[in-house]
Image (cartoon, rainbow, N blue to C red; front, side, top):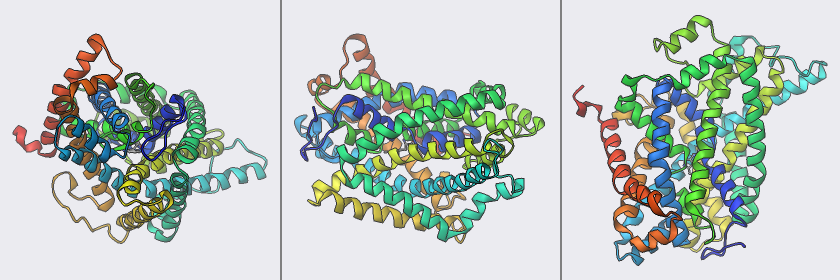
Length: 487
Ligand code: TRP
């Protein structure tokens, strides 16, 4: 029962909707950004606040976004406009979706560059594994012919080599454009339905492997240790909120767009719960897969310094591209695990990048009356160019930090786009969505879409009306201007 939007497109089943939405949610945000942010913000406190944000802010907003989409049955902006019109409210509320759509587009620009690095590492480990088979030791450690320093140098060398980086970025963007150009049913749904199950099998295998061979206890302690001081730190809170929204693909017009392709029979509350659970589990499981491997390769004294908060986990993005490859070097079957790991990451990245592109493509098709392939090529091409420019911030522009204030200080272009989207645009868009659904939109219309009843329904209404707007606004304010709290 394919259900049509105005353009006649829709998912073939609820399963396909869940896979596509989970595919959009699960991505580099879970596998790269989550460990990096958790590492930078001291682990436990960040993770706890992140889970709080997912449950009490992310989930209600997720339901709000999907229901706007399903009722509006159009691009994100048009869907908000329609719900506003039926509620006798101003069409200006569509700014919520507009901000989100621009954010999704901006995220795509650097997402594809990052995913390009993953493609490169697949190449590195594929040739390494081929070599290992050739030398008759397929289950040996990875990259036996390189020193640790050389392995640590793979990412910096790639970043200094703009040509290679642009080619990888081009490969990834080309595949993204190809999939989106084929349409919702033949492109986006198809890859989600194939790649997501494969992703889960890979993730579980690697986690089990990590649990047996790495420092699992230290990772558990790091990720869940309770630290009340940090829990109250507004910059940690803003990071956690930004991560929760980013990871669930909220505040980026995304879930409105995909909601439009969902059928009337779909229970949106239940589906939202499944999406949020799957996404959050993947982030935590990814943490439990990555940190044991990383800690396992660190000196014991460094691990205890990290756990006691005296030292930060080195890395950020480097966790995945520097610490992990170093760990794979000395692990049994490291070559194969490394290859599978990066293949898994690229699967997750691709199902997200197609969604990032679809958010603006679905708008451009209707707004400018373009064919899908043309809209896809223009927008994908533009995102490619911006990403290419931003990627120079890794070498020639290392000193180029155009916005030297607030959370942007000292950040190169790449970091600025990330901070601007995750910590400002996504929260602003989510805030507007919550205000719109909680206060402005017609109550009967909302109630007929949300699939909730009884106490749960009242609780959800309370969350969207009060908790979400207040908490998001407060976190935004104090996270951006920690000085307001007087310290
Ligand atoms: N959720 C994605 C991730 O975790 C990133 C993301 C944010 C996204 N907003 C989006 C993906 C919109 C698709 C569409 O990697």
